[in-house]
Every structure is written in C-alpha cells, then in structure tokens.
Amino acid sequence: MTHTRGPKQLPVDDESARMMVRNKIYAEVLGPEKRNQVRGFGLGVGWADVPGIVTEQRGISREVKYLREAYEAQKQATTAAEEKMTRMMHEANEKAEKMKREQEESIQRLRAEQEENLRLAKVQMAEQLKAMLAHVGINIGSFGVGAPQSTSTQQQGCGSSHAQISTRFEGGNDKNVQCGPPISSAMMHEDCQSENTG
Image (cartoon, rainbow, N blue to C red; front, side, top):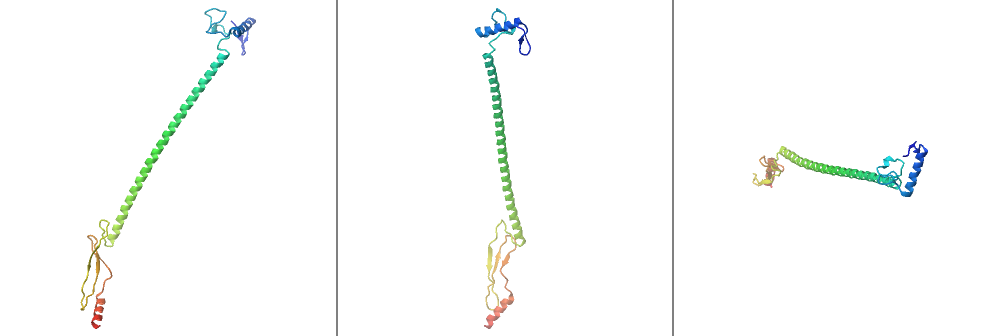
C-alpha cells in the first residue's frame, strides 16, 4: 500500500512513490480499477484497502458525476423557485379577488345608503310642504291640491243685480279659502245710486 503526507499527498518513502507510479501506469494502460477490485491483489481486496489506486471514479467519470450532481442541484433549485413563484402568484390572485369582492360589496352598500337617503329626503320634503300649506290653512290631504268647489252669484239690492263671485277651494276637511278681492257694500251702493240717477 502507498503512504502519503502533506496537503499535496506526497509519498512518504520511495516504495510508496514506486507504487503510485505503477498504479498510474496500470490506469493509463488497462484503465481505472472497476467494480471495487484491485488488479494484482486478488479477490477480497477493495478500493478502500489500496488508497493510491486510480478508480473509475477518477477522471471523466468523476467529472460526469459532479456535473450530474450540479445539474440535479440546479434542477431542484429551479423547481423550488418555480413552486415559490407559482405560490406567490396564487396568493396575489387570491388577494386581488378578495379586494375586488370587498370593493363590489362596498359599492353596493354605498348605493343602497344613497337610495335610502334620497327616499328619506323626499319624504321629509313632502312633510315640510304639507306642514307649510297646513299653516296657511290649506290641507292637501294625500299630497293633492283641492279643486274649485263652487262659484256663487249673489243678487244685491238697489234695483240692479251685481255679481259677487267668490271662488272657493276645498282644502280637504279644513276651512274653505276664498280667493279674489272682497266687494264692499259702499262701492255697491255707489253703483246703485249712479244707476238710479242715470
């Protein structure tokens, strides 16, 4: 067996150096040792028993192994990165969908509140208008203004007929409101005198 020393694996004696040279020659001529066997030592001797030999793990086979291991590591890293990216995209899509649903629900609530506020404003305006009209003596009932009720013609004295027209509006169950200026008795009397003297 060979014995080496130091970081550069130098042989410790001449015998070890000769064995290392012989092993390299065997490897160059016959190829590296295979199947955990060592040429020249018979059966039962493995690679671990002869540290200085050149095995099939050396050279190209070892480089291929390293390349394969590096490729597998890179493949695993790429797969992990793709899985992480897919997971992040999935989480982002879920957050976007959640925000969209919350925004739609907020818009619906705001729209319902606006419609309710508009309805209440209409009712309040109608009640205020009804109260204002009731304050001046007009009852609009179910939000409708009453129609003219009657037109009366009264005959006055002094031998002539003067029409006194009073237009009355019915304000539901409230009192009637007379529209038009009143005609005083003095004015009617003067008209009667002018007709009699004429």
